[in-house]
Image (cartoon, rainbow, N blue to C red):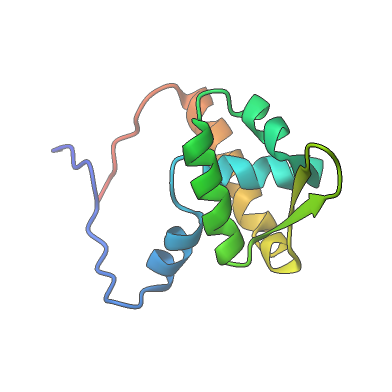
Length: 120
C-alpha cells in the first residue's frame, strides 16, 4: 500500500473549516487559548512566561488578532506601569470543546510516537 501524506478535502470558498482556522490558526493562538481556558485571566507577561519561544512582537500580533475576532478581551488596569489582562469572551468560551479536543488528540498523537499511515 502506498503512503499518502494527505487526503484531498475540497473546501470551496467560504468553507467553515477554513473560517475556523482563520481565527484559531497560527503557531501560538491555540496555545494562548488553552492557557486562557485553564487560567481564565492572564497578564501579557504571564503569557510570555508560558510561551518562552514566542517573540513579544508575535505575541502582541496574535493577541490583537484574537481580540479583533472577538475571541478574547483586553483590559488595561490603572497602575504604573499599566497592567494589561486578557480573558476569553463569552464567544471565545464557545471554543472550549474545540481546544480541549485538540489537546486530547495531541496527547494521543504524542503517545503514539510515530506518524500513522492513512488507509483508504
